[in-house]
Image 1 (cartoon, rainbow, N blue to C red):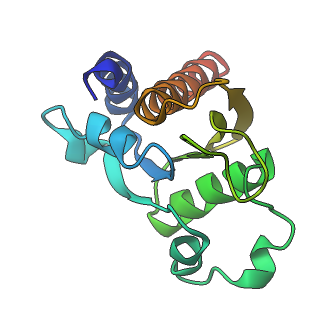
Image 2: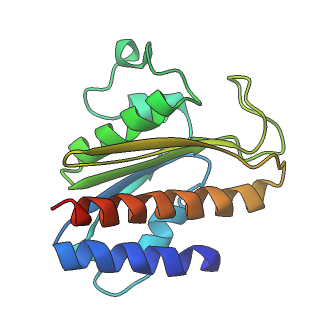
Image 3: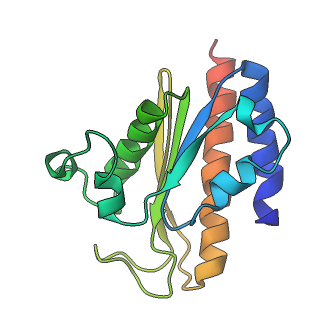
Length: 166
């Protein structure tokens, strides 16, 4: 997790300065993103919390999420990452939603993606950005770290660009 701390600290500083909050939905990063964001004193000022949605059942366990809602957001896609970011943001009443979902390895996903495939999204007021990451690695722990770093980098980029646009 220590590799994520500089990025989490930057994201935390930006959120605190703006008096904004974050909620995180992660999957293959296994809670590393939330843990990194909570590693700093005063985290309750900016971190609403999050969930490791490692399975479809976990996502369906959220209030008002139905199988019909997931028909058009196949796992492993940016549409799915955006759905997760929007959903966690709404459910936890946060200013920002951040999501990560992928195949850490050593094997690929049930959706046919290779190990190292990850989709990420950040959603805030007037901002929705998603991306796909392919590490081409089957190193589970290495991918978990890279997925977390990439998610936090995406969040920082969105926070900085939305601040510049004000």
